[in-house]
Image (tube, rainbow, N blue to C red; front, side, top):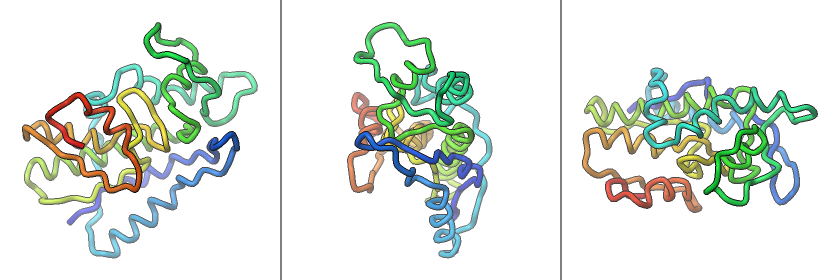
Length: 213
């Protein structure tokens, strides 16, 4: 069995996040991936670095506006006079049925559900490579080269909606993988074994009968 993982995923390293009105150290650190990778290879799994699968698989389940936001927001955020080094929204638009916001500040509130999904300098590359990891593993299973594959995707994904980050999640990696599998299979099931609600995955597929979560 193989473990798919790209060390570039460790480039996502925001130092802080906002919880209960308090700025605290971010618990979602690169060491989490290091420990999982060490356990996987220690158990005998063969390491595979994923190929670059472009933006197509992400775009299959996420909106164009959201992808543009994730890939550009940190650079735009740094232009704000007196702004922080990491993107953490201070406002959230009170409705999402009007015109799409133009400013970086408003877009951050629009696309980030909470203060627990900060975006730092290396975040986008890591987010992209995390999704590539999920795609690589799904393709191996879908095309029959492996019965099962461990995709070590960091940042994680089950709180990410089609157009919104939250809870340390940016791209919904399991959703991306499920859509890849749908390229061959009529129905796909996502089994979420985390200890709390994968609300982003639910929101992404609630209206679809072909992907069960």
